[in-house]
Image 1 (tube, rainbow over the protein chains, first blue to last red):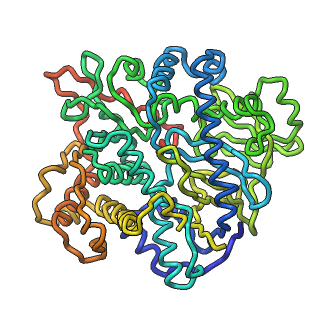
Image 2 (image 1 turned 30 degrees about the horizontal axis):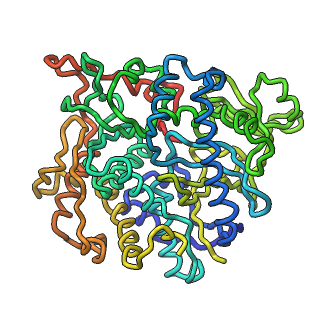
Image 3 (image 1 turned 90 degrees about the vertical axis):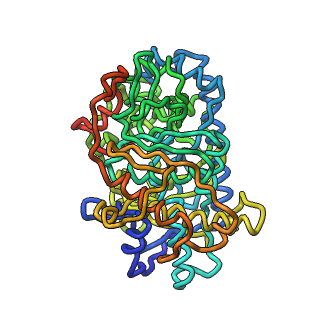
Amino acid sequence: MQRIACDERPDWRAKAEEAGFRFHTIDGERYWDERAYYAFTLKEIEEDIEAPTAELDAMCRELVARAVEDERMLKVLRIPERFWTFIAASWKRGDRSLYGRFDLSYSGEGPAKLLEYNADTPTSVFETAVFQWMWLEDAKARAITPQDADQYNSLHERLIEGWREIGKGGHVHLAGAIDDPEDGGTIAYMEDTARQAGLATTVMPMDQIGRTPKGAFVDLADKPIALMFKLYPWEWMFREQFGASLAGAPTRWLEPPWKAILSNKGILPLLWAMIPRHPNLLAAYFDEDAKAAELGDSFVRKPLYSREGSNVTIMVAGQAIDQDQGPYGAEGFVRQAVATLPRYQENYAAIGSWIAAAKPCGLSVREDASPITKNTSRFLPHAIVG
Amino acid sequence: MKRSGSVGLVVMGAAAFAATFAGGMAYFAWQKPSHAAQAQSAPAQPDCAPRSDGMRTCEPQRRSFSYYVYPHWVRGWSWGWGSSYSQTQTAALSNNSRASSPPAASGTVRGGFGSTAGSAPYRVSAGG
């Protein structure tokens, strides 16, 4: 794994705008950054990223299978008891997952380590699946990368395959905070992949989902919602007004309710307890667990529920070397062994390893001047060059 | 090719390749400014009609083999329903004004999801 500085395409902003990638710049700062790219060998991709991602996915599914049979695990994850049956039913029914993203610490040396699993509402999907591929095509044509460069990226195709498996010929509603450029863009892209898979689609704002007197969810035309893709966290839905109607409604959801288990950072200590010393896991414990002392005074403290690095603190030798503020943490915290992200010049790089339709299928790289990856961390393209 | 490892046939590799760009093109269409939609006069595609309340319903894209073979995503290309498709998508996502009150007769209530994203301490994006 190498960070290779390169010329940015003079016209990349126009190309981004043309592709509808309008959040390429956030608050005046670059989000998309092609002044460098990350180069991987095929061996690194296949052996260090792709295979471990499949293994992590299998481990996570095993964890869910255990959790739905063990109320202690659901309790320690702080999942409200009234949703336990709802979650367990979705797992036992075999509700399919469409996609997810494992965030890894990986430097090219030693195994990739799981930092967290964005199992429920992963974003950066369009820039991963489409825009970094467009970059690669241009980069090869303009000799920015070798002519035979490739990319670990079949995310687009896998999403379409996933939609086919889940609902070909059916109708999917897609909802979220569509006024937000990133969420709206993500939903628009997901809708496109659904339509290419043969599904009819309806996009609507999350707050316009209707509930009938009988407790069914309907769209703005009062038509029943049979299948709903929601870019909206389960833990938020559980505590909102309509949460009480989830179990009784006939709507199928994407991601499925059992992903509420995996989007919780409490899975980090649970995975570690299930398969201690697995090469792709970091030691992790719940904050209140006496074993957390084994980590000493160097660890990463993360809220059970958190997004984009919020309320994460990195402690080294008893000192907080980095922390990001936010509204999370009321449900508790976990402590995870420190796996500092590899640093290239002044940039810390985190790997996002994508899985769609149950297969690993793509990679994204986020960079930040800080070791905590945040919503503003820059997205850099990658290539396979050896 | 690593990227297309899941696609066995060469011709399907090309199809998937083009589909990627098609996704980008459609994405572009959705995100154009609303004034662009107003300036266009092509009729909306009947099966993908936008509504004033922000909801948009579309039928599946029925793409023939030629859709993938020919690079219609290149700027300026006009192919079948492409132009009207673009226009309706544009209008749908760029018009955020919508009614929030439930239809009185049906008894349907709305607003029971989405409150957390709109509350002050949380970032606007609900993704991660």
